[in-house]
Length: 378
Length: 165
Image 1 (cartoon, rainbow over the protein chains, first blue to last red):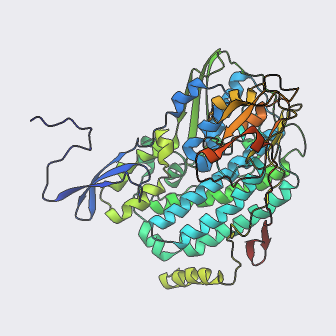
Image 2: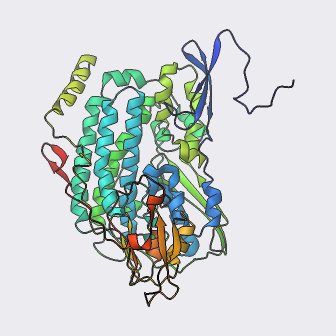
Image 3: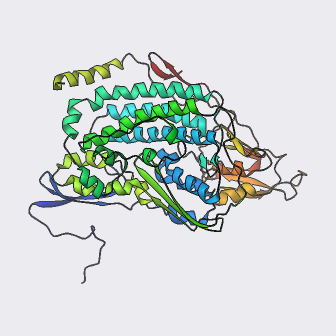
């Protein structure tokens, strides 16, 4: 009887006296919708092979059968907690393809929505990071405080997640009456709340001893492996798309990027927290500088068409630089839509980080990469 | 900072929360307040009006049976199907109206954007659960009914923390 040919990773491997192969996932606890094949020697990891692809949804292929506007609801599905940022590069690209001029007010409102959404995503990420480390207070607090911003987004967009708010040509609807005051009040309180996380989590000696000097990614490796976002900034590279290639009105707003040198799991978890405070600053600044009235959406023809053209746009999402490449061939539907996602790039660093670590440090190192399984698979 | 000081600070931060108000929304007893009367769309300016994207509401006297909502939904969720209605409405020569399957609807609101006659709006009604799949299908007659939505709780921020007051 011949042995069946199995995909790599599923084949039965030769037993070794010391090395044990462990499949973490693809059922959910501690891995997301993916599998991490870990080889351990006692408690220490000797090799690691992340195996994504369990939640592939064919978003890019689906985009070739829908027109530029109807692509909006399904293209935000890869990361429903960060749906405005996931949609942002697509919308910017389509606007360039169709030659649409977005009004100033719409640009500011888009920035506010994107920053609120970045905080919502980061809070959800932080809650899971806390529970991965066994810190259940850090699960409850961000999950609760996230409600403040979800409430704002619900007032703005009409949905708590999957807003479908950005559209080629601007945004779907204007802000509700009295939104500025409510937004300012809740964002200020939110910032006060996240500063309290320092005592209980980020300055907590137990957390520091648990995560400091684990999963160290050096500056050279971070650049060589092509990581983005908070992972790159935690390794000492000052790179933020909002600063380097400002889109919409980010060049007029006052904010800074946060950089840490150590490149360990602790730094990677601290950078998104510091970024949330910058987001609050951006929101306050944008609310002040925003034109108080004006149109927010350019009227589109039914089934708009672009020329023979291609465009690549990228934005800074909650996880890092997120790009979108769109090819148009004079039809209402795009010829090709390619999402270049930060999650997948950050996952590449995982095998390099885990070698020599204890198995107990695997969940925190894995989740500190700011990885979202559905986004990596698209 | 020493280890002992850090742990005491962390404990202290947790103990402070005993004096703070509770942020939890006691859902079936309390319900959230929404900004408007639901998401609506103004076809003359081409801009929507902010509101919750909940269950739809269909105005029979405005609907002409043009199927634009159904065409918009084809690329998203295929939730809207056109069904026959009695031939009493004069403006609706085709005598068809949308029927919405909430088992499929993703509440994106693009059908509302597509309607050029102010016929389809979204309301604040979000409690749509049903014991059967058939119960999720809303006929034109059911969509005509304006829902009553209880709204009594809003986020309030005081010195003792945020609450759903």
